[in-house]
Image (cartoon, rainbow, N blue to C red; front, side):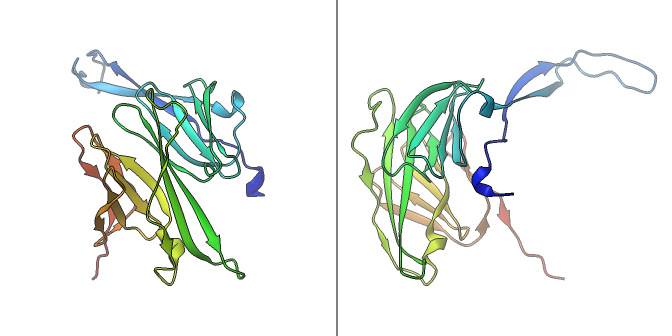
Length: 218
């Protein structure tokens, strides 16, 4: 299948908590009244919004989804029914990583690459833009320190996911499995490289949650 013709087929999954009341039947023990189950509702959002090849997504506390795309310089904000709410435009917004923080400010981490004659990436430029009620246009983006051929395979420095805590620290998972941490002024404060990290999340207490890959030897 031609990847360029793919459209968003990933449904938004919303979780609704529902209480199961106690019941009895032959062979089935009673279920405690405080035991709960999760019901999942899948919604096709591509039927409402014109969405191309998705690069990154982030969900805020109002079940609104921000979406960046491979070939579009617009970031879409849609509701849980898939209806467009807003659109943020920027010349570097295609292939941007997205993260809502605890107050629903949207962090846009855009990445642009410079390639040589052989098509190899030899520099990466990143910008941080914050969109919120105080800055709805996303004005005043700030650049990270550019990477200029710092490693033999610099493409592994590309951010594949970002998350932001309540103090505006940015946690970035790179393609090589490392996690870099930046403060609100975009100074790098830490690099977690002792494991191969697969994903990242930040909980309500600003704890970093990440699965890792372990190697077991017989």
